[in-house]
Image (tube, rainbow, N blue to C red; front, side, top):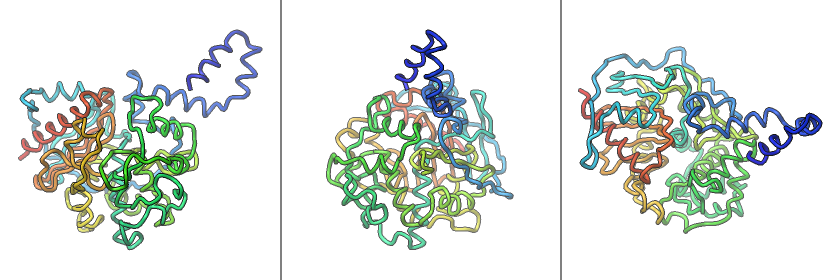
Length: 406
């Protein structure tokens, strides 16, 4: 992107130079690149997170229900503050510091609190980032239930033969569900040359995510030996699910999860240039519909009288795998968190307490015992401060809200 911009700036010296350059440009691609380049800028991040369609390829998911699952209002006051490691936090001040743009709090299926900030509103379809991983996990449970994936101990290459010869050869489905593939992958969002940012450029430029995954050849450790959060594992899950169902992930997710949820609006997925859904972070929905997904998980896979996701899958996918974090993850507060099948567990989690998380402050927090679901969208550019400390503070905020509800 920067080289292209320099080329354009250098061409400003005269029209005779500009015209040949402009003639060679793919303007839709250029416009997309320019928007992606400012995706996380202080000025644009809030608006961008509520409207990603112009920056990436995408596919619409027609999942709006004629009779959305009701979320009746039963307002309650939220606590004024909370504490973490002996420090007191004012809830509203913390929310502003974290650039939260939306919060929906459900108690026993009723809306105890709902609000929107930073110029956004309830109709915005907001980017999930990695919360999308937990949606894919739920769809995966349906494929297991339907016998499309008889064993989680099968090799991923059985369903995604394109991965033969890659670092994923010899890796099981269970390994990737647990983020324990052993693949060498740099997830540092602040390093321009990291694998996660190289992957982002593949997506923005219309490249192949399947090809990117197949091009990863090195392992950091043997499969199944330790937990390490690497987003590309979830794309591999998407490849497995496509191979098992013979359908796109968008179609399968819409049929098995999103339509049964009783959503109030359509959703959309970001895709690569080949129409492959960006399942590790590209889902876009209203905050109330994120809360509906959390409510289904809170109700152990049920929506009304319908068992959408098998109850056993809900339990298994939100149970800590027992794997120790990798050396790098032990150095951050993320090492205090548990991990199941694409779901996170807080420190000292009680049974039925888990959450989905996306970068820049996206959360779906669930506490089954309390009947509480909290969906939050944010544009927190400092979400990595303190090597994961922000996540732990947010979890304590959710727990204090949960404890305050009657």
